[in-house]
Length: 71
Image 1 (cartoon, rainbow, N blue to C red):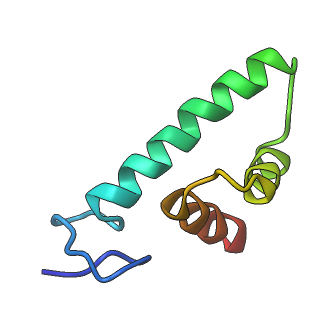
Image 2 (cartoon, helix red, strand yellow):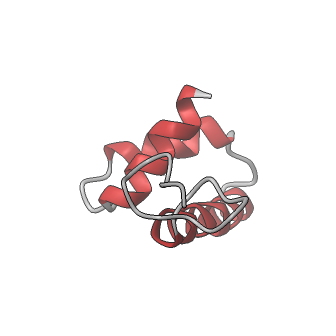
Image 3 (cartoon, rainbow, N blue to C red):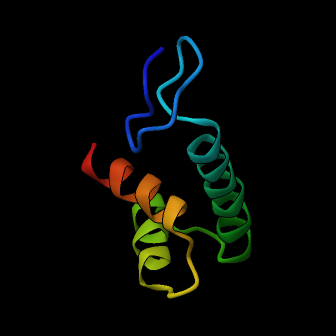
């Protein structure tokens, strides 16, 4: 088995992220839709950078954000 590209946790075949990081990525996507609807529109990059500055943003979410911003 391979490991997650963001940590040492094992991943299922064909996946790039472990269950924890995959869940964090899903929550980021859901949160983006909420922010976009409430603010009329916000660029995804701006959304991600804003979340990085919020002290209560979780570590797993921050790891997913940093990976996405690098791409």
